[in-house]
Length: 326
Image 1 (cartoon, rainbow, N blue to C red):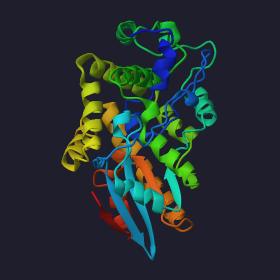
Image 2: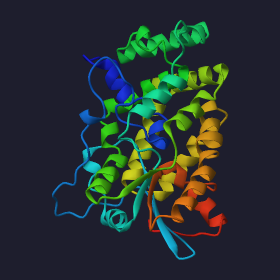
Image 3: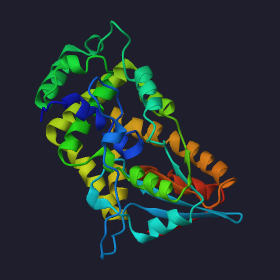
């Protein structure tokens, strides 16, 4: 797995464990001494084909007081074979007055600044000072298996290291940040000269992970190391990608229940913070945007559209008419 750019490659996919499910981050997420960044990633293109692309993800139409919007569930990694997206999505985007996504992932600088603030220890500190000896041994074993020396990640906090390792595993299965759905949507918006709006900021997103204390971050790391070791991390990620790529609603809902259940830091953090805190905030932002933009097309991570406290369900409770197209 180790290459001439091992850490650079890992960090392109870093944050992909929970991040690829929920947070839309730039492909070239971390500035390193090795050249590379967002421009080095292939942007999904619309291939010439006579076949009608299959449905992927989940698509909703929202109406309220004469205004309308579309909601589309994305994944933040992908494969070229996923594109182009099917006609209902591309028509909805073409009809929209603006594209709304979690972050404009074309701009790497705000994410880099947020990562320095929330994902790194200050000079003179190290992850080795924040882990129990047994956890540190587990981490070194996982890093060795991934082809990374401890010194290459010792500045990073446990939550970030966990996601780097899972991200490397996903990348090894051909799931790339540069093939994430947001890149396809942004390329289409550029061709159509559409306004692009953000629901969140990089600083806000990474601060959520940094809100975990040392004990919680160590446990989060231990859980992810265990999931890497027994293959659960890859199975969960691949299962969600497969469900998204087939627009398989029952399977999506089953995976949402599995990912948000259980007595783990990962499940509770996902349920209470990454979804429970952000979903109502996203709904408020969507309400504001619908007051100003004609038919916005809103693309957010798929898990935000699932469950009883999802973005569609919260909009319904606020009096919006929400229709699931598929």
